[in-house]
Image: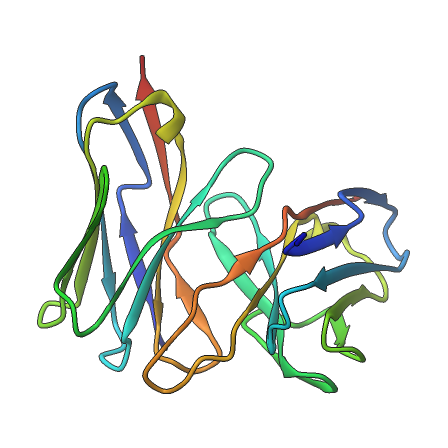
Length: 116
Length: 111
């Protein structure tokens, strides 16, 4: 049981290049999330998905796109990378829960992206 | 909008001492309060959580308290050890799709 797996672990891009970050979970979780972590700013939500084929914008969605074609995978795309997108990106998933039961997030170990 | 404030941003303690991290949330509908520990180079991991129908929860050296009236919740670590050194995040959850995180506390435990 690998939990949440992110690839790649590190990447360096030049301004204007594109890339896709991959996230896979093997816990059959409905909800999946992409966060970015910058020094002093905690974790900020980029996009999230509440089920296969659905996505929604989070707090900082500009410059990113996502897709959830399969329940276990959640992809984050950067179409034209900018230096402001230099960050550590975390994928997370969790059980759907109910109105009376919330469940914790399970995080991957992150992708460190540098845009020059 | 919803907000979670976390203090202090940095905390340094001597091994064996206690550490306390405090958080305040703004959304009165929040009903679930997880705490995550992030070690260097890794993703955050849940260490303890508390639900709104409980005032206190303890797991060995870690405890969390919740004051719903004041919208405060705190993490208490007793008998700190060097391996407790990490970044700690509090969070508040309303049962919807999103979790609101605090900005994090970097804890240093000096041997």
